[in-house]
Amino acid sequence: MNEAEKRRNKARMVINYKKLNQFTKTDNYFLPNKEVLINLVKNKKYFSKFDCKSEFWQIKMEKDSIKYTEFSTPQGFYEWIVMPFGLKNAPRIFQRRMDDAFKHLNSFLVVYVDD
Image 1 (cartoon, rainbow, N blue to C red):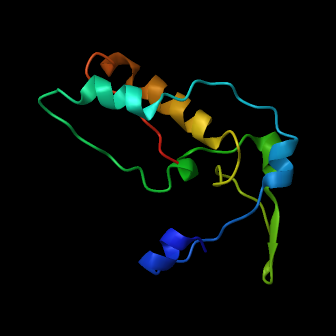
Image 2 (image 1 turned 45 degrees about the vertical axis):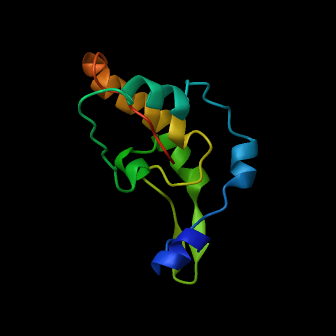
Image 3 (image 1 turned 90 degrees about the vertical axis):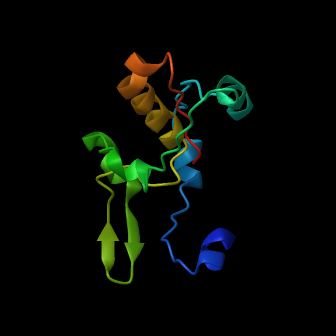
């Protein structure tokens, strides 16, 4: 449990994928700079913020990658079929999906993924 979760009294399972991430090819998709986006929207008339709860869990894992997410608990072994938190490319994959989903609105909408 990390410090923020302790303060909110919420438990969340965290798996250390550090070793897997060392062998994972980096996705070089561009992650926008928060300060640049703030400057784009700071003088706008309207502002909305949406928080996608467990955003990475909305993305299915590729079948060939599922086996690499295996973890064990006292109850047995499990694999993720959706993207877990902790994979190094997760923020970039989610940013790409959001950019693709909202690209037709880019004249008045910006997407920032704060993992």
